[in-house]
Image 1 (spheres, rainbow, N blue to C red):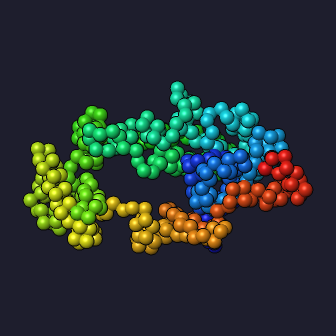
Image 2 (spheres, rainbow, N blue to C red):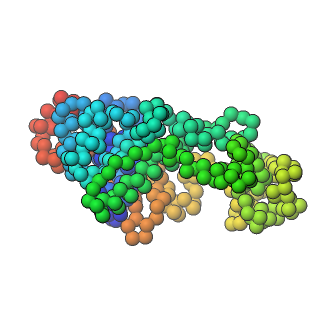
Image 3 (tube, rainbow, N blue to C red):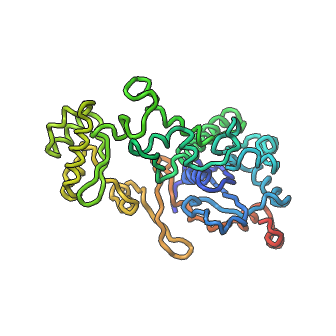
Length: 386
């Protein structure tokens, strides 16, 4: 376990969220030293959605908020906390009597962060949805994939994490900074769909500058397969390479390494762009990864392999950067974890402050810290409060 307390040491967080957006957010906070208690009803213990990796550095507690005694325990936790994260649909916490308006008088310094698909207001606020829906509504899904084909769903949850988790973490840090000046907490309304709109900054820029169409078209934009210098290609041995030689100096270097100097001046030639793409496809498909080694290793080629997850976990660069690590779980099985991407020199984060709790693993410890004795804890368990 790490010896560094982290930038958020002393910050207490309650996380009521499930799935990915909220737990990923509180994981980021926990990695940087926040004391996080993740709370969930025991009836969800067997639904397969509990992720040890997302619950690293946190304590996990079972608590039924629909029972008066469970609500009482929760309110006691809130009174001594700095941040609350929840991911229910708008209105759920209000019906439980646990919304921001109810909790603010109890703890005026509380920062209350709600993460939803479409926000707390607006015509779509009560709509159900998942990552693909948020991407679709925000106009991002329509830009993914080759021209003339259906949109391609990304293999990772961009909306959940990029539009939700990270926006929420930024919002919480901003609110903590503001509270240091004012002494007051505040409500944070995070819409995953809102968070995605900023991802459209470049497509919007290109369309307004006339370098793209008025409405960007899938697979036909500057950064999406339109030109040979920014594309993906198959190799002779069934792998793929990603080429991102956007600037002329990188394109020149790549073409020189591949022995196709005649393509250098054709980089953005609209009349011959398909000819360039076809030439690059033919060239890469004629070579194996081994034969492409000098190109892939060159620091100015902007060319790399499209790696599998297994390859990534063995990547020397990521291991050097401490982005790939492991721990022994409760069954002594070695589990791989992703490291902390924010590298702070004086208050570094850590993925290994404490081993992940099993579901509800800290319930009894937390209650003891709150003053409950063993008989009371057993009674609460018998009544399914915990």
